[in-house]
Image (cartoon, protein in one colour):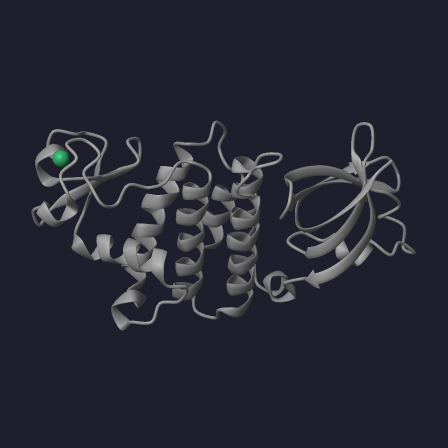
Length: 252
Ligand SMILES: [Zn+2]
């Protein structure tokens, strides 16, 4: 039975008998791994505190026949502040659910996805304003879409290919087609949402900066509606309804 080490973030848990749990982790080196945390429900377990949702650990795992087994966990970051606040918790669960959904085993992009999730959880736990949290989660959604092969098209019209610099004042976003649509094409499309230049700038800036530096970036209405546009885009790419969406609608 070979051992291996990897940095990993806990995504999901299932009970396994009286004392054990199956943990789905996103590891920096191997993407999604489902593994067993033996004895984790016993009060004497050394793994206990490390096996909470969102916690990032340096794990030692042993290859098993069905499930790999967690032998050791050193804490990297527990993101404790996320658990103190329901809004933070809802956004963090949403990010984790997205990775659980889009993540794959042995994904070649696993270091990028792990780093993006780590950065986002750190920002959600650190940021105080909802505008900042929305920014962090939107940035994450754009990155995750790109690394999962569903990059959002923001440069050219997804219907006629003209560059966004040629767009007229009104243009559109089409969640099904996966990007922006120029005014001419959008007028004939039923499923697209009308947006303007502020949205385009926001999406571009969210991609480039990890924090809303400018005052115009802190427009809560614009942030929420941009967030919902991306949420719609992602929902169209998932086969089943994400559980955290209902939680977010109640809390956020
Ligand atoms: Zn067009």
